[in-house]
Every structure is written in C-alpha cells, then in structure tokens.
Length: 372
Image 1 (cartoon, rainbow, N blue to C red):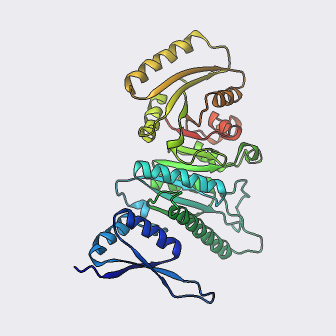
Image 2 (cartoon, rainbow, N blue to C red):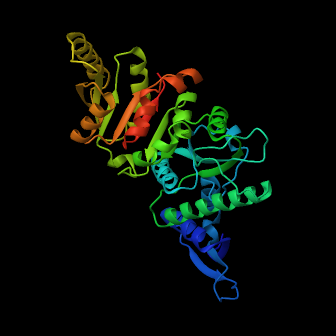
C-alpha cells in the first residue's frame, strides 16, 4: 500500500481538531485542509488526510472509539462488557460539571458515558408543574414540536461544548452518546437506569443556598431514594474536576453489615486513586462505650481487608447531625461524603427525610450514595 495521502473524513473544525488529536496520539500523521466557504468566506468544513498505509488502523480507531456518534437509541441494549456511567442533565453549568467528573472517571475505569435529558410535555392533561429544572418547561404558546426542536438544539449545543473541551484537553476523549426521554424526570431517569444498567449515576445539583425552594421536588433527591444504583451528586461549587484531586473521603457508618458491602462497592471505583478514608459515625448524644467498641471492631475488619488503604476512624457527637458533620468536613478537609441508604417508600420520603436528602440540601459537599 502506498503512502499517498487519502481523505479519512470531513468534519467541522471542532470535530476535526478532536479527531486529529486522537490520531496523532496513536502516531498517525494528519494533514488538514479547509473545505468550501460560506458567504463570510469562512470554511464550512475541514478535510483530514492521512497516509494510505495508515488508513486501516485509523478506521479501526474511529470505529472502536465511536467518535461523534451521539444518539444511539439501541446502545443500552448492547453489552460490550464495558461499564457504563449515566449522566442526567438539564443543560445548566452544574450539569457540565457533572459531565466533566463523569468523563474523567470513565477514562480511569474504562467506562462509556450516556448523557440523558428528560423533557416535560406540559400538554398532557395530567401533567404537573415541576420544581426542578430537569423538566423542560415550554412556553404556553409553544407546541410540542417546538419543545422537541429546542431540546434537540440544546443537547447538540451541549455535545458541541463537550467536543470543544475534549479538543482543548479539558475533558478526556471517551465513548459517549446521548438519549432524550419524555416524561417526569425522576421517573424516567429511574426507568432508563433500570434498563441501561449503569455502574453509576452522576448528577449535578445546585449550591445549598439555592436548594431550599426545591426541597420537595428535587429530582436528584428523588432518584437517590428510588433507585438501587450508586449515585454521585455533584454540587455546582465542587472544587474538583477529577477524582485524582480528591484526597479525603468520609464514609458514614452505622456499623451495619450493609456498610461493609457498600464500602467494597465504593472502593471498586476508587481503588486506583490515592485517597484517605475517614470512617465516620455520628451520634446525637455523648459517645457511649458500645460505639467505641463497634468502631474498634470495624477498624480491625478493615485493617485486614484493606491493608493498603489509609483509613482512620472518627466518632462525632452532636444534637444536630448535619451541623456536626459540616464542622467535621471543614476541619478534616473532606472532599466527598459516602454513605449507605435504603430504598424508601413514598410515605417515608414525604414525612421522614433521609440523611442523604438532608445532606444533599444542607451541605455543599459531593455525596456518593450507595445501597448496601
């Protein structure tokens, strides 16, 4: 096969930059040429040329990484053995933050990412107004098609922004795609996750000063309590973009058997990261001797099971558990709180808020919520 230059693809400038970066990282030389022009004398596309001898390898790279294939309605039905991360978005800045953290984690654990947006059709007679921005609220005069058109434009705009960040190396280059669903956000997210079977759901949230108005309707809080899948809730003011920047994780324990299962599940995500785990128990009264004994027992267990992980143990007492935890977070520079929670029925969710829900609304620390 000769080394003459052949056209591999023609893309927009942003996508061409991404593909060029990917190919050159694989030691394939790429030549670019502008293609066509519009009325402003600006190129309408970029042609990428490579040596003919590199063509088979380049095509394999493009196909294997599934570059630029966003909408894959059948993807979740195909099991290629890779883990999956689901990222529900509402096109806000904190959704982009969640995407960045999800992409970096996916790169580390060799997973693919599915971006999900649920839009709300206000023209159903039984439709209820939503308090959370995961629902796409159309104007009264807009019809359903206008809503759908806007949603498609928004998701493409988000994908273009992600592509730009990949080209600028702010995001890693991974396999990702999107899916759009119509309905009530928390219900559709849970239903899709049940079918898609992700290893993790990553969701952005507002800062604590903006959450109070959405206490009842928070989609993130509802999904946490409705699904069996681990959830990572990322507040918009989260200081890190990559778990490589995380040094301290607090794992809340009640000394139950399911905490041991949850801890193992958490470490499956963090085993390649250099983090310190703070095993934390909170009491609403003065620490008693049984708590000390239980903590010593769990310390002995984890020292044997995880000899290479740095773990310390902390008993926290206080009438207000959230306030006590907030103080501990700041004193110990905790960047992530992990906890185990149980699936709850609607009565419990309405009248007895869970610890995870309270922390979601009252703390600005990312939460990693697991099922034991």
